[in-house]
Figure (tube, helix red, strand yellow):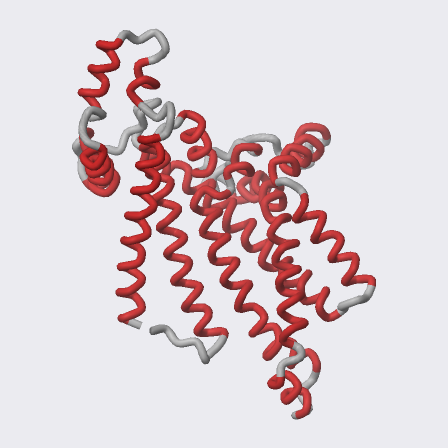
Length: 323
């Protein structure tokens, strides 16, 4: 276990470094990527632009700029010196503080939607496999394909219009903190949860169905049946447990991606002011510091949940060892 943790920590550092370097180089070298021009405005004179470049260090070599940005990213949150803060080029706000402010909404959206799509995905996949070729299987297959085919932004706009603006079944407002009112928190997030979960439910259901149908024909399943075990016991302890291994991998990476800002469209449509919506605004403004902060934040969670998935793997299948 110690070797596994050490190797994961080293891998995390390498992933964060690679992600930050690629992000920085792309935005520095891309056309229109000069932040001094955007900060100076359309009517700025050359001297004003030159002053901004000097004050913000844009005249330094790219690797010096990269080093300064990494120092502000990792040192700024632990110091009280404003010069060490990672600051947005557009609105001059502290990037780390903005990400912290968006975490409650993003975590609430990801956790609720994740529980829904994992549970319903397992139910849909199991029922489809058990009823393979029957009406229930075909009906669930059609529903799953419809769910996978609907774009999240389109589904979000339609459901918000129908159920929040036209009929007022759900509130058409922003995120309400759990500490403010647990009931309102749940009520305001229920519609975004379902919209975000629809795509994953259909996909997970189809993957699990295929895994179960493949596992049913394995030798150890036939052996368990030959020993006299009931169908429900065989399905639960032998078939479903081993079929869930790919689902665990998918869920870990998808959940990490959603936490890391992958729910950009859902947060934007429902105006939740989470990390995803913050990153969308940074992309629109070509604002490098927020993009760097969100990229590192997302990479951290992806590496973290990848390690958690490996641990869960070893619990589901004793043959898998953490080395």
